[in-house]
Image (tube, rainbow, N blue to C red; front, side, top):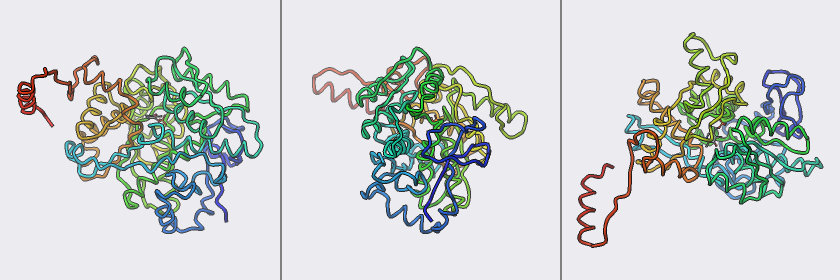
Length: 452
Ligand SMILES: *Cc1c(COP(=O)(O)O)cnc(C)c1O
């Protein structure tokens, strides 16, 4: 039996829609859609056989399985033919044992999944290869698609522009003017996308792109489009595979639009359904305190001593944060995220600007080079650890979502003390003359003071 998958409403409405249709919401209820796989067909292969197959494909060069995402082809988008796949061999990122940083928190089993070590420098590549491949398949099938469009806080647009350019498909990106980094702005420009800087925030760009893509010839690439979740969920499969098919106790991920927290839960749930694992890890969704609508909802439910519900939630106007990629006040994937958190006994935590910046800098001192969003996740880890909620002997994985080099302004401001709070782990250059004996003496004096 050939694996197959379809769209279905997250509300559980039984109607199925083909993945080849241009569809972002349930036509009946207007609810979000999700991709549902024919698990019976996938069960035709045993759990052990899937694990063997995935191990055999990993890191090889046989098209398209050398990609971390497409090595899971049957579980992701079985409908796309290999010749229509648009891949830059994304995924297969390092799962780093954070030995020194973990020791500082009294943890021996802390890991950082380096998803930012990717083609466009963020984990958005994982979902974008699936979305652009699906569009490429639709075009091959004769669908008249003129362009693919997205609203973005910077990383989605970089990924869409790269995959669109690789496939020769026109791309339109809508960015909030002045709210993305120089690296994030230059990426879609370099890849030849139509870049529109709008006089609004991300939530405003999201409203415009939904209007723009009411025209069926312009395809919507935001994570509301559930095809992207299928690529992002492979993070979970990779983590378990890299841990020799063992499940961690905790997975922490920074959350903005909340597509990823649900994608990660979906990856683990499907592995459990198909017998590759026996239990789910607990998820922690980590928000910036200035863009924390899910955290506020979670606190409310906690205070009332019950499970998180959708009606706990109220959108906010997201404030300025160093974690600019998660500056979102009205997350589109909220209903999916709530389901994911309830299913995994999840936690929502938040980090202030100072907490995220210090956590990022502290991790950097142990050899990492973290983006501010990863800083949010690390700061939340530190809090959960300090409260004893994450125990010393537990295994935790932090998802690092972007490459630090996309956010050098943040690091420069920290180390040059241009942020409105003291920088605990600041490291500034020392200015010396040119006389060799003096310079050598100065270096020895400085080494005596150096804290490693
Ligand atoms: C998109 C993004 C996130 C958040 O993902 P959501 O699915 O929007 O919650 C976190 N970090 C970085 C770097 C991102 O680009």
